[in-house]
Length: 424
Image 1 (cartoon, rainbow, N blue to C red):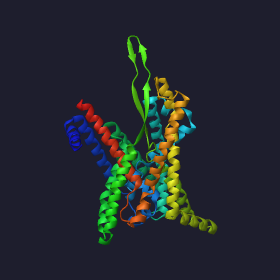
Image 2: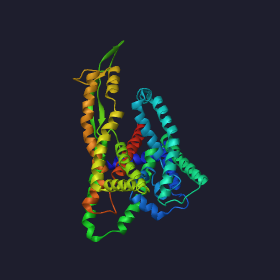
Image 3: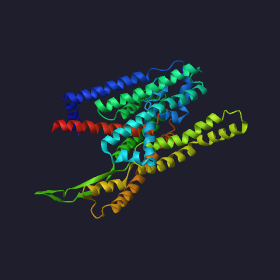
Image 4: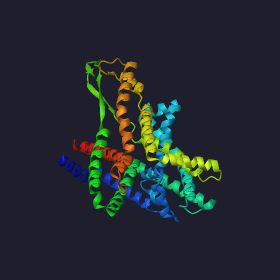
């Protein structure tokens, strides 16, 4: 296995086209990290650190901004608006049959148009999110109060930074290797590792050595579990019927249809976290209201939602429900059954058409249970580890870990595919 890995590296170095693609990705990520290091002026760093430490929604936003939000850089929104626009477009396929047909039935050309609509929607989302975050940060004393012109200028710069990152991500996808947006998020997560290691080393206490050893063992086991579930799939056998065309006999091939255990990826975690923490943000804002009864009610809501047990239980069940919800949106058993029947394929022992759709629907319902439980556990993993080990300096961010593993596996597969093509 190690020899095969070294062989792939050698092929990447020797192949000029692949080497240029890898170097282009590295160069684009360097540009991104330079942009993420340029802060906006007049930031209260201490207030910003305290705000991010006590607000998990903005902690997640910092992940998707590639660390750009932690110092309020000019790319502080990161690819967040693009991800939000993509999620909205996915949900719109439920309401609009035309969008659904465009995404699922019109092939690559339809998907390209669908992604173009997502890019158009990213523009107003970037301006809206930039203005909302500036107002919230100004209320918390993190950025100084600005006049109308200053606010408009900052919103324009922040929105332009997000659109620039989206463009860089598209360039990486087209001229590099892998998905550009995912690689930007990955680079932001990885860039925070040295600071986290330094913080853990600085706060190291010899009396907590067993807890640190247990943490490392848990990190290895959890990473292995994430890899296993991410790659796990349920093969459904498929046979193509024999067809005679002239003097040739076509078909008669047996293959399989891979159904992934984790169809939804990291999207359910994002949905659930937004649904939990957005009301908490509103309640925090209303707790400063001059109306006494409104302020007291909002303060009680903040206290209730801040309880770790309440937060963890709600988070787990919402991730579980959203996993089924998003899988139902993205996986269409009726469309798959229709395509199989159109191509002369069938599942052995199952009648084509409606019976095949019901069979696939039953399988995806059962395996999604495993994926939903997995995502729910990954989501509340930091809370569990902090409660068990008592360590607050180090923790395994479930969402970040899932993103890193998924991006690395996807990147390795694409490089492997490119090197295999050139080998043969």
